Image 1 (cartoon, rainbow, N blue to C red):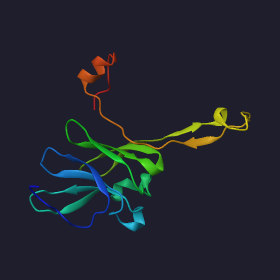
Image 2 (image 1 turned 90 degrees about the vertical axis):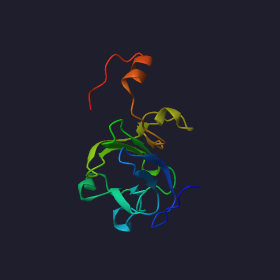
Image 3 (image 1 turned 180 degrees about the horizontal axis):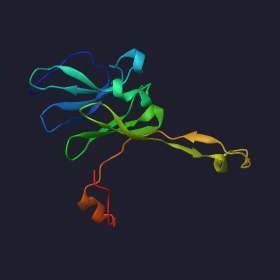
Length: 153
């Protein structure tokens, strides 16, 4: 172990470096209770100071933010955006690192009526699926998957 940073975090995981050397992590239980209790934390490795990237004042459309366990963060290739998977909310979203502003979100809900044990498929039945990860795809990865073009971001 080279460094130990402690502070107000609980159940943090999915740690990744940003280009400036700070670390982002999914912090399940270290966030403010009034915004849901979960946060995306940014840890300055030089000072040990921890800030909240998400949620912020710009994050209101996606509040409350809570995942008791699980969740994932992925850093964009340029380090300016994060993709977040909130397992317990069955939701993925992308945010700006600088502001915490949500860029888009997706809730994993599908019609599960065809799978009902009683066989009744006449009425739609919503099923929420846990979100375990969303990832950025590089042009090289896209080409390997046979995808000819990806939107520029």
